Image (cartoon, rainbow, N blue to C red):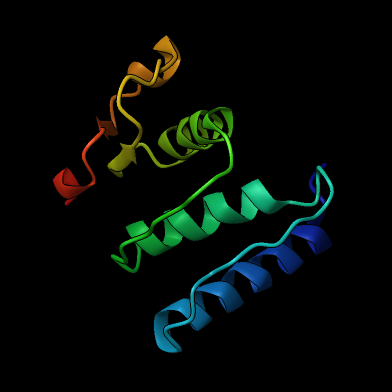
Length: 114
């Protein structure tokens, strides 16, 4: 059974982040916290709502390639009607499951990003 209070609190956090980014022109920044604290879920929700509903340009930077692959898979699955771009280093070996995502475009040239 979903934690209704937790979902309500998460919605308030996402709303506050989007409000700060949209109206106050503040970047949305997540800080270090323990695994399971909700960082990836928050990034996923802010990205999906910001891109899909508010038509914002969203840039997400992560520390590792595996984090990027995981986040791309989560975003592409959660928001199949949206298009996501993955800008990566030249020669990066991209896993087949990421290559197969129909709504993810890949480039190794930052100038090619829309």
